[in-house]
Length: 209
Image 1 (cartoon, rainbow, N blue to C red):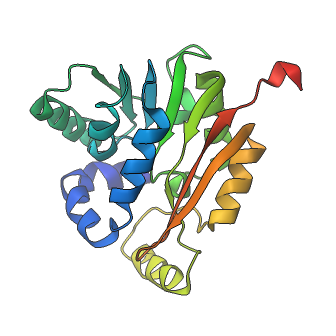
Image 2: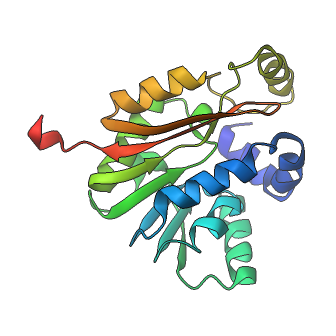
């Protein structure tokens, strides 16, 4: 089963799984909302079932929420409709083939997905291209290698077919984000079964470097 098939099959169970692994999420949602508060247009990558979408839509003027799995987009649309979020547009799209011109967005959010992507550098580069110079980049990410417990549970989860691509530490996440052209301004490690690394910053103006 490839990764897209995995998420299509498990879309209906995703929110249930977050009851076990989502301990860090309330704090991560607070930090994410503050990072994009007042933004005119936010792009969300791998929006999944809309857990993060619903929160950021209440503090930003407009949100374009994307996911590459059809099943996830269906769940996302249902959540957006239930919540009456008229400022959210749901789009099926892959981070590596975003259908938007460069610099379209004021902020980009990619929550709990970077550890799943085989091409981490390529995904971060696509995200940076999507936002204007000085735009906000927010990447709360489960860091499976941050603690010994996380590493053990991650390996057990892998036996179930979970499509993890890498086990990150928070320091490794920060390094990857900075290498992509983002000046990191906020870093916080939020404890949980899998520690969550909250990393946010602003894109550098590449023309001035």
